[in-house]
Length: 429
Ligand code: NIG
Image 1 (cartoon, protein in one colour):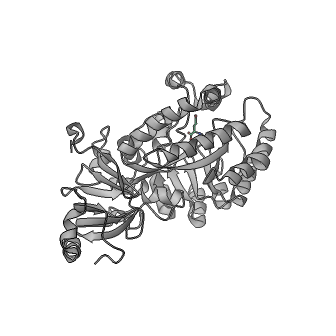
Image 2 (cartoon, protein in one colour):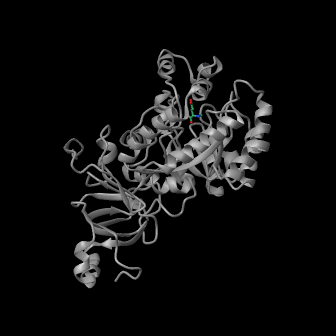
Image 3 (cartoon, helix red, strand yellow):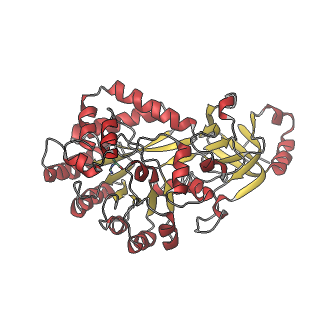
């Protein structure tokens, strides 16, 4: 029976990847598959996840009412938790395609930044853009990701770089969250680059003394992040911001060891960060420190590919040390402009060495760990009803048939937010 009352939505005839298995360096265990499965949703949460035959028995006990419950037929295909993209910078204005072309002619990311391009170039575009422009561009990006299966999306500030502009970005993210198909999880990234018009030390002081307290007062962010890198911020500066963030109740994140080795993994672990992200140059000792601290390793292989960095972070290193591994897009205007879930899964496999099952786990349960959101990322009663019905039989298909988005129906908090079942072009598994 259904103790809390009848379900509001059913999913039948599904191969359910519950993600209740542990992530290991071995084969397919993390998926926690239920064959011939079914799901019952009540309101915003999952009520039943199990065998279709058992759901049928429970429905029979409801009598004629059962026939009135909306039901989706998964047709024997894969159903997974909604995807959690736990690292993006998707609120931005401007186009940095010329920087991409410069890199392809041999310039490096750091050289372009030192010449006044890079993050500071987006800061200029962002400050000139109207709120409505920023929101409509971000909405399009969010809609594309939502159609591809993303139900939780972390978005960072970091292109404002003044107290007023960073607050503006976070307030816009709040508005975006109120009207978008994904839940937006906002992160304050005050220490992204030195502002064009303020001394670096003064900016760190302003972030710690003015920005973080105001962000906390208005409850504008869930997390606090910093970019530890040559040409960005050093360990002392990052520690000051992340400690102030933690005191204000913000979840710590760190851009660590991306372009050069910088003991970022060790710093993230020492500060008790929920995640350290990038990690292209992290050592086994750094990964071990993260494992001990419970700091999730967020791999961003699309950025390594986009920057033609031969050192994409290797999942094996982190799994071997016992870290939880997450996979995220790092969608941003500079170092990663590819907006595709299937390409992200492919890069997780081809560049970072995840298996398809591990990649899907990393983009669901791994993302939940990076964001410290225990109510999602796996499928079990009482968790959030965030679900994807895929046009694929198994997780293996998703990174294999890349460049095509395979999500058919996306459900967020019990509501269908995307239904592409009538679009034959997408039914191509
Ligand atoms: O995560 N590394 C720092 N921040 C972004 C790049 C942002 C940009 O270039 O605009 C990243 O790769």
